[in-house]
Image (cartoon, rainbow, N blue to C red):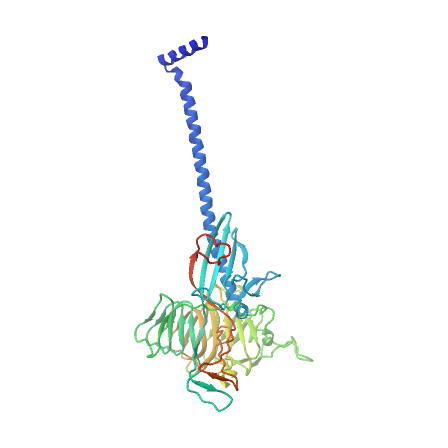
Length: 516
């Protein structure tokens, strides 16, 4: 009873005054505060977790993209390998090598790390199809617990295309023969090729196929007497009196220019023909260094820097000098020709000049790696004897960050025969000279009165034009209604067509690009 009495007195006190409210009020505030603090802490944790997941998801996409880009660069670099083996895999040494598809019909997975994440990509076999496309790359990026998958589809691409014509009727070879149809192939060659815009100005006369992923812009009195391909969504713009000759066509579409590294010898820096340019320091009893001056030069005397400077790796020709090269692959930084100088490729020789990057050559931004002015001439003795002979090839690595240029001008009557190929290099042609071969660059500008043409039946070098060759029936064989063909592919190059992010993950046993 004593306890009950004390409780009743406490209640009466609380009713008579406010002092007794202090404690329960304080307790209530404390409890509420703790509850609110707990809610805030939980909210912060949840936000941090969501932010982390969102960041990981975005990073996973970036890693997947990086994996797809790595796959593309390897497909370009190993284009010649893919001509004989449909897939690439990492060998025991860690280097990529050709292989065959796995049991599910796709190439083996290739894995790697980048940007704190891990990528794994798979490629459909080269030479086959992936749905309506020629090649597919599926790349998966994983960062922390987040994983994302993308697909990139490609079409096969080359600067030269062969269109095979069917034979009709009956053809007999090796005996008395009759033919009621036709056989063979038509070859389309683009002789002026760009990644970005091609500008044809002044009185330029272009008689080769023109193709670029950018715009084709013709101004003044420029004439294009051949087919023109501009990039997807771009245009062939003609102003002034510029025109395309009757009977030729305008098309749209993008193509990939094979990187120089895809066909450049991997040991070019240490194994090359530069020694043939070096001045001999001793001639008796034998010439030293070995192989020096095998490439002839004159008139006049060689020096330690003319016509070849081994320190700067520059070929410098001036006056009335002539350099005749008969070696194979050269590894240089610059070529400059002035006056009436000539560079001649000897009969029967296949000569390629590979130009190192401006960074390795110590060249500044905008540097000119090929400079031809005056009455200079580049010619190929073998090509002049037979249009199937070899022209000299000038292949420029260029740089994605340090711009480089090729500047060529010539005077009326000069005919230059060469292949200039530099997907990272700007090419400028001017003057009155005639140019034969192929000119490919990042951007191309023709102005003045240059003429670009090719002889009938000209075939580009196989390293940049991996054409499928078509053979006729062997002697003694008979064919009815069709031509028997043997095809040889020297390299496979691809141009990306579309990109898509896949949904979910590919179920076990399904194709890598399921739900893409």
